[in-house]
Every structure is written in C-alpha cells, then in structure tokens.
Image (cartoon, rainbow over the protein chains, first blue to last red):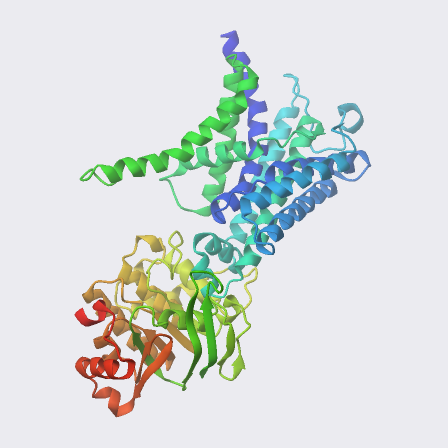
Length: 309
Length: 264
C-alpha cells in the first residue's frame, strides 16, 4: 500500500514533465508529421531555448520576455536549417545535424559554461514555476495549472494557424510537393517557415524545462527528438480512429507525452537502472516506426487476407 | 496567348546519358485555342508541357504568356497563369487532405497566402456548387480525404482545381491515360465542358489518336522534338486515324512508334 502511495506521489511530477515535453512534441509534430521531414535541429534548439531563458532571467529580465526570446532564438535555429536545406540543397536530415552541431557551440557561448543553475532562493519568485516538489507543497499543482494553460493556448493558436491559407499551404507542402508548386505555393518558403515555427516551439519548451529543472544544461537536449517522436507515436496510437480533427490530434500528442513520462516514472520506480532508459525509449520508437512497414509487408504477401488488420 | 520561341533543351548534358529533346522548338497558341498534342514515345510532348509550366528550365529560347516573358519565372510564380492536370491522379491533389482543403489550395492560387481563415461557409457553398457540376456526387463529400476517392474522381477534382481560377492556360498531360476507358471518357467530357464554359486556352497531350481528333480545334503532332503536323479548322474536323497515321509516316519517314496509340 505504501509503495502504491509512493508511486502515486511521483505522478504529478511526471505529468508536469509530460506537459512540457508535450509542447516540445507539438513543435516536432510540425516538421515530422506536417512537413514530413525528420528535423534533428531540435536536439540543439531545446537547449538553446533553455539557455537563452535562464541567462536572461539571471540578468533580471522578465520571465515572459525571456521565454519570448527563447521562442525567437529557436525560430532562428530553424531558419538556419531551412536555409541550409533550401538554398544549399543539403538534405534536411543533414541540415538538421549541421545546425545541431553549430548550436552546441552557440549554447556553450550563451551559457558561458556547461551549466547555469536558477537557485530557488534567488530566482524562485522570478520564474513561472519552480522545481519545489516537496509533497506538502501545493507548488506542483500550480505548475500543472500553468503548464495546462500554456499547452491549451499553443494548441488553440496552432489549430487556428493551420486553418489559415498560409497554414494549409504548409500542410500541402508536406503532403504533395509537386501539386503545391503547381498551385503556386513557394515550397521553399513554406519549408523554411515550418522549420522555424517548429524549432521556436521546441525552444519555448526548453525554456519551460529549464524552469522546472531550475537550470539549463548543455546536455539537456540529447535524445530530445526520440522523446518527441515517442510522444507523437503514443498519441497517435490513442486517437487513431477517434477523429481527424487537427486540434484533437495535437491534444493527443500532448497526452502521448504525458503517458510517456508516466511509463518512464513507473519504470524507474520499479527499479530499472536509469542508464537503460534512453535505450528503452529508442527501442520503443524503433518498434512503433517499424510496425506499419512490417504490417504492410506481411499483408501484401498473404493474398486474400482481409484488408484491414 | 502562349508563345514558345526557339526553345532548346538537353537533359544530362555532357554525360553518356545526354538526351537532346529540343533544338529549336517554336509554337504559338491563339486565344481560345484547344490544342491536342500527339506523338510517339520520346517525342517531347510532356517535356514541352513541363517547360511551359516551369517544372524544367529551358536551355535557350523564351516562353511568353499573353506577351509577358515568363522564361525565368520559377514554377510556383507561373502557377497563377495556368492550371495543370497530370497523368498520375495522385499527383494533382494532396491525398491526406480533405476535398475542400484541396479546393481551397487551388482557390488561393495567384494571390498571397496570408493569415485569412482558408475555408469559410461561403467558400464551402461555392465548392459544393462547383462539385455538383461534375455530377459525381462529390458535393456531399467535402470532408473526405482525397486519397479515398477513385482515380477518375481525383482527376475530375484536379480539373476543377485547375480551372476554378480561370487560368490563361490549361495544361493537360495525358490526364486520362491512367483511367479505364469509361472513366476516361467521362473525364474528357468534363474537360470539354470546363474549357468551353470558362473559354480557356488549353494544351492537351494524349496518347490516344481518336481523342486527339475528337477534341479541340487544333491538333499538332510531334516527332523527335519537332512539330511535324499542325492541323486546325475544317481540315481537323475531317481527320481520321488512318489519315493521321499516313501523314505521320510521310513527314517523319518512320512508323508511328506508340503501340498504345494504335491499339486504342
């Protein structure tokens, strides 16, 4: 019973972690699902967002302005990837890797080292929420409330944006490049725009993550894309048949991230060595990405099998 | 309307795969011309269309639409002058977007895409009216994913999307070749109807000689990057497949090289 209560006690923390990574995954959704490209810039831009936010807060800048700056910094990172891809013709995966590597240096420069702490005593009242996770504190619920509100606003804004003419042209670029050009869409522009928007949101999630961890660390983006992909995949598994409404899909990406962190906490709680966690995340994503392909191969071999599994 | 002036185009220049498609191609379309283009495999029909559309750039020469030089305009900027339908029904529409979303993409062609809400109730009514004209029952399937429609339905919607902004030029690149004969006939009927109602200038590539004769007011035949026949008016109306084949071997000095055209 005690163990169960202890486990239950880890859930609010996992939920807040999940909501933050949900924002990140929603950003990733724009490139991975809408533009249909795998953008590896995010591993760098999430840290850029965290670094920009933390450094500005320690310099006394208002937290909202610091978060806005993180958003803009992420957009710039996305622009770099976009230009490498569209102006220089470098494949988007490689462009993302190049930008990610550049960002490693940029992030070190911004941080002026490998780590900056936002100590609670000094900055506790300057950030939106802190990492105070003592059970008697109500802080975690305030944090959850703030994160829920932020996620809701982001989903609402993106729902609106992808219903506008510009937003629809981004979606059609990812869906059918040839048709988009034939319909007068400047597909280079839409790609660059999508990459910038995606990385802006990812960097914004980095700013949230830095507040929750009360620090920005040069290593905090490592493997971020895998966690984001896991959230997207888990979210899709949940809403596959439910609906095609765009806002609901984004909502389920956030749900996917929360489920991911619930599972993560539970696995840690059950005593899995934390060294293995990244391996586990990567394997889960690999399996989920591979299943549709294997399904297709299996079913195309067996003739006469009913069409829908 | 459309002027192709002394255009040359070579693919893979300087390699073993070098292919010279055009050395000096010229063609002028008058306002309201509906030109069918026929020719054997590798004659350059599709390449000509792609050069006009800007999918490929010319090596030399120029392309003018309504007197304006578009030779150096990228594909997406030329799109405001022309509607296009492709051979593969999957090419002309976005499979994982709804019918109404596809139509709204075409509806924005030629003006800047900003932060206006793309599909309003009035747009939806307009799309319904237009889809009704196809008489395929698509007016009730605005929120169906394009990928769930049949090839013929997709080509019909693509045609609608290509013509809804009344383009100066309609480019049809063997747009019925991938369809079964009955569906192809229906799509051609819709093509005729849309061209007539919107008074469009059109260039239709086809492999089917009968179709080339039955549709349009002018027929050109291409061979090895040259236009070897250009027939219009009364002469076009009285054409037969046999006469066309004979003219082909006379002017080109070879047999017509497409089995598909002979069999259909």
